[in-house]
Length: 77
Image (cartoon, rainbow, N blue to C red; front, side, top):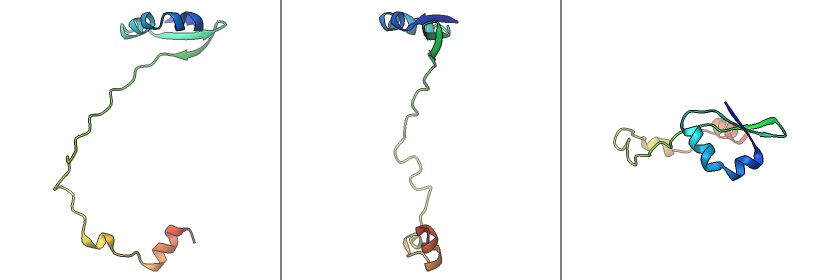
């Protein structure tokens, strides 16, 4: 695990990232007390438009008005 103080982290961010990418744990400390740790970010999931097109069917009744008792429950009355 590699400890670095805040000032050093600000001036050497690129080097710290390289150490982190090489698999080393990097901890940032203030006055010798750990305050942060670099952690990996997950790559965002690539969205695929129309992935489920034609596989999900919403019946016309879905848009019918709700029964009175269910509507009052949704409204919190």
